[in-house]
Amino acid sequence: MTLAYDRPVSPIGRRRIPAGLAAQETLPARADVAIVGGGLIGLSIAWRLARAGRAVVVVERDTIGAGASLAATGMLAPAAEHEPGSDPLLPLALESLRLWPAFRDALEAETGLPIDYRPDGTVVVAIGRDEVERLRFRYDLQRRSGLDAQWLPGTEVRRLEPGLRPSVTAGVHCPLDHQVDPRLVMAALAEACRRAGVILVERTAVTGLDWSGGAVTGLRAGDQGVAAGTVVLASGAWSGEGGLLPESLALPVRPLKGQSLALRTNARTGTLSRMIWTEQVHMAPKSDGQLIVGATVEDCGFRPGVTAGGLYALLEGARRVLPGIEEMEVEAVWSGYRPTSDDDAPIIDTLAPGLVAGTGHHRNGYLLAPVTADAVAELVTRGALPEIAKPFTRARFDQPEPRRASA
Image (cartoon, rainbow, N blue to C red; front, side, top):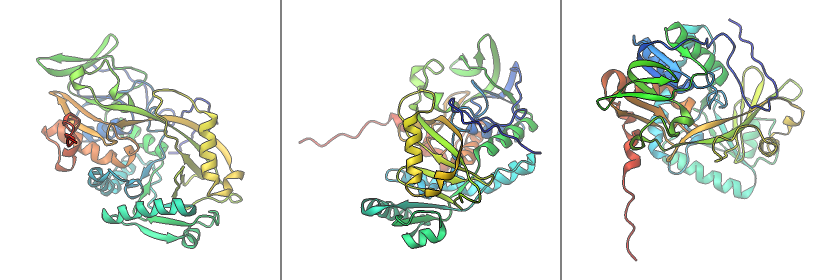
């Protein structure tokens, strides 16, 4: 099957999966599982449960992938992402990376659609003494955490990536970091869900949950309702919005806006062979010739659109290490909202009988999709989390802050 994508330079900041792969359907009266949110996490969970024999409906307020999933770069990069304070997340991230090849193989086999899985690694680069010192600190942290990371002098970095500027002073190579193309993953997931019998309903906002005897028994969308044995909240950055959950179950999730752009490379401009990170941007080459540059971090709520300042920061950050971008055509620009919890880690938990959450993945949604789908499936089918996911329940936010020693 050949997929065609619209690639406009868009002031709206939106990418979509190919038309026809996410068909508009109507809400059924009943389902085994009703999932709120049609992004990467929601569809991964839906596919996993449908393959286990459950009747699943996904209800998406906008279009499939419209929140963060199609705005992402598609990094599966636990080593490059590792930073101070993220040690608790590392085992979950590494387990999910281990699951990704099987997740990819099943997805491509069931749909016949490639997802551009690239095991090329990441190089984090530095320019100048101050950046090198900060990069050395990061490298030492990676090594203490047992990650495969290799320190490279500038000459070795430029041997790997000849297009980088001579001013690149040093780098850290993370060979086990991988990447995918979000457009292809979302297209394949939508098709896999459809083939597995999942009902995908777009442009339908969930306005309430049905409760009976302290348990959730379904959901409402306007004047329509779906009775369900389990409702899964996977609505990304909108998971923390008021109105759907009672105050006692409110989730500490907020949107962090990010702007990104796609450049078109060719034989004259050259490209990269692997992901390159700097302190300002990350750049991810895709097999179709796109070079994705992302992403700003803006704590501004659900403020839509793409700004001149955001695009300038991306282009200048990329140009600082890769001069070839000056000749690359700007093919698309967009923005999206990372679903960020108070500790930047996901929330995977049973919130109440019949109500499960899988949300708050910050910038690690693609990396954590397989392990999240498996963990939520365990909750739905067996009523318990696997050991690897137990540190990521909502209860961790209810712990009292440690007392300060008196003066």
